[in-house]
Image (cartoon, rainbow, N blue to C red; front, side, top):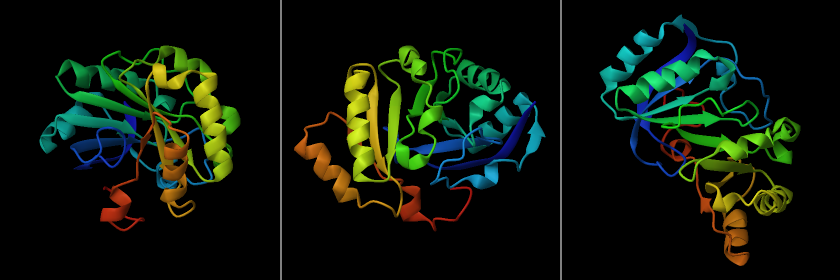
Length: 212
């Protein structure tokens, strides 16, 4: 059983899969409290569902791309079984994780999108840097940036952990806090081999809208 907040079909709003039709399975609970969190409703709200029932719901939407998100999916150990079962059925599975819990047991067929929390998030001390050792070249690390100080900090982490040679690296602004051009200018000036991204869903639908 897993406690599920919502299951819905939309487009992928972030990552290198941005713009593609995707089914989202949002699981309940999170062990972090980021300053910019936009899914606080997933901290506790949800209903218990068996893995097979979740998969049947996913099948109804007809998308091959499926993201397991939260909250923090890895708070619930059974999320590992869900991802494996989806991969067994031929789905392209994405895991959106805050990076504070172990990822080594995640099925290798799953595409991990892992945050490294910046100082602006107030959760910097929760980063589990050991996870970097278990990332694949096809996985992604995401820095959500809220200030110029965050950008400098992220660049330091990229060099410290040789990130761009271990996985893909994403820079994303905290929506409404920092101007995207501030991040893009630094990427260009410092010739950073990273991908800039925006949260597409927040430009398509109202920011507060769920299920998108």
